[in-house]
Image (cartoon, rainbow, N blue to C red; front, top):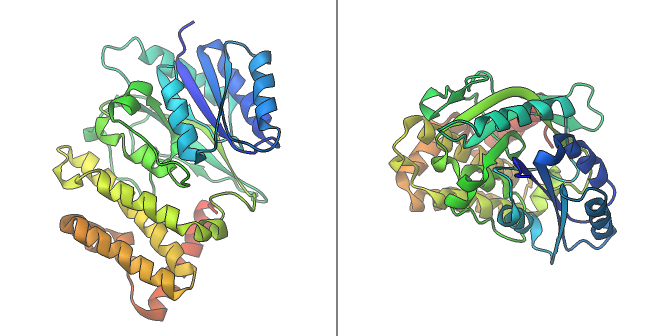
Length: 340
């Protein structure tokens, strides 16, 4: 049977939670293939992956490789995907069954259209340990709901709002046509995964359903603030790759330009605020170097991010008082959005 959707599940030492993730993905039925990418795990992940492949032949494929990091596992998934569309699901996350059926219905019907669907966006839920209220990331104010649309139809995103890997399903050929190749042994490549293919996206659809459940709570998670601070060089590396990807001003579509600038703004602000919160002189120097890198790379991009964007302007407040104000704003955002 031809596969509609390939779901790539990067796994590294995921024995404690990967089965729960995969169980929720089986709701897609035999029109879905689940690619478990064992990224050189040292626990029982390889054995679990092989057992699941035997239990669900034709649906689950176990692929084993030497450790290449999250980006390397995603690259392997893209290279092996047989589905018309592709979704990345981290092994400690899961999906909602009824929403999954809605997703599959939409993808199935889209294949009958003359104009292909390049990107499907849906909501995700912050499943934060201990949080009574689960924050839902929705896009109903920025995107037309339950209809096909193009960049010209996109409205303004809220400040700080952007499309994450948890939100997006790409047409597989879009990822291949754009030549996406994520860096290996590097965290935080999910931003590059979403950002880099955007100029190749022509037709989109926003399904207002809470599909993806994004787990936050383990102390060793890559998105834990202290872990992110310890890996700031990797965050900055991804940030610079995004900066280098395109001369955004040369993109013809106005709405696409606006959104890609907003995406760059958010990622650069995250890098900057973590460099500030680390509290070291070395990292404050790295913050200055990051902004100087943008200035040397593309002066128009620097002006846009530094002076025309609200967050970009605020993140460069001077002195101790400015840094305290930035950290306070960051904590408020943590409370509102429930990240980290």
